[in-house]
Length: 397
Image (cartoon, rainbow, N blue to C red; front, side):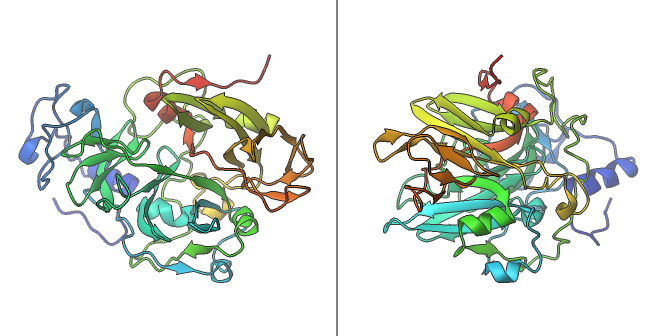
């Protein structure tokens, strides 16, 4: 059967076309043939793949087809950047962007914004910031925005990533074009193929409003809508998906009942220890101090960022707020934070004022930045699936 391709391919339309056409569900294995499914058997097609499926670190039965084929949701391989003034024509103040800011050799910060209105349609951008090849990724089904160094070691092979068309625990499974290994977007782990058990290095990536990004990085640029693809940027192909009452899309198994499956949390992993900070608790506390592994951290929350998976138009999404995670240690001392005036934060040691990006905007430390802690905002069901032994932070009492 041939399906019309007059519109961009997305999971929901693809699955709707399949189900509406009455096509029976098939279990596809090596060569695309139907086969029984065991722990070490795939239920997705391997036709056309050169991947070494004999090497894997997770049960092959955990993979599910997301609908589109390999790179049916196409990555952006030749990204262009535009100025903030140009992007103001199509980005609203509360629209969410992924802020990737990397410290350069001279100590300055080089930043770029990746709007979720674009990432919804591509999920992966293979880019370079300064001298660092980066993969900026977003899985709409888990709401995970994660950035990685595309090398396994400095000076090593630069890998180019695409979408396999498959999911594991509803999360995007990526592939690299150099070895055709499969990678988990949530963790940066190679889980199938030649590079199995290799791990990509996390880079700081923070989802914040366009308005907050411009205030934090006034000299930074923005991923352009001129991607080489015809997509209705600004619209959301998953309207209503993040309703708190929803069940996750294409997720097998039970969900952890301690929180609603679609509750957003901020997830932090350090030294093998994982902690989740629920958005409702963050909204109430606004600044949470904690220790994860060997790091003394603070988690900030502020209002003003829209959900990208709420309404058909991203700009109309409800305000879910924005979060950032930072080291509390600066210049040999540990700072203590509390909510400040408006949407700011104040440290007890100097009385300096800080914003959601971890920058001091007033006081004795004005102009300084807290070191970011890699983290992700993620739906609870996905966090609990990948971090079942992780700690859930709760308000005292």
